[in-house]
Length: 176
Image (tube, rainbow, N blue to C red; front, side, top):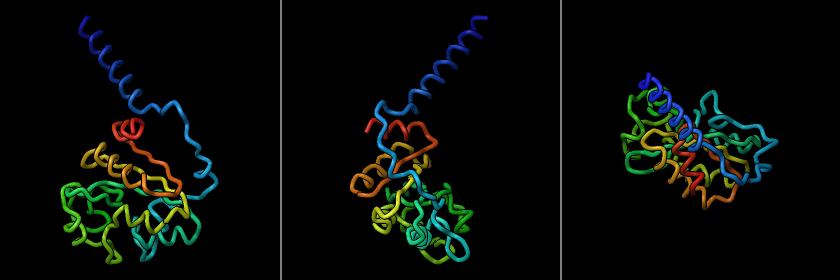
């Protein structure tokens, strides 16, 4: 019976720790710049314009849509915009982004022939004209991805919010 209580106590403590890590900060930032928009998930893609490409983000801005995108680091520390952990579905290469360099990544282009974009290039392209929802992926390290995103967003003048399904990424943003 005491083993069962010990297991139950451990589960309760783990659940409490998880909730603490993802709990929002005490101050709620003003989100009004993010509301009232339609959002293009991974950019405005379709036809010969692939998802998460500079062309898809340009089309979204031109159409007046906010943009939801995903960021993760390459092995050599470049923050790129790509949803999946690997290039398999979009580029046809069974390689994980966190395991290859940016140069290697660009050898496997998107269907339109372009490279998976750098987050910094997307920020420059958007230029604050529409709001961004930035999902920080956990592939290759949630805290590293969050730190890189925060550094680049610090110089960005447009409206944005960050999200992640990984509690350590959100904890990083909460603390910084």
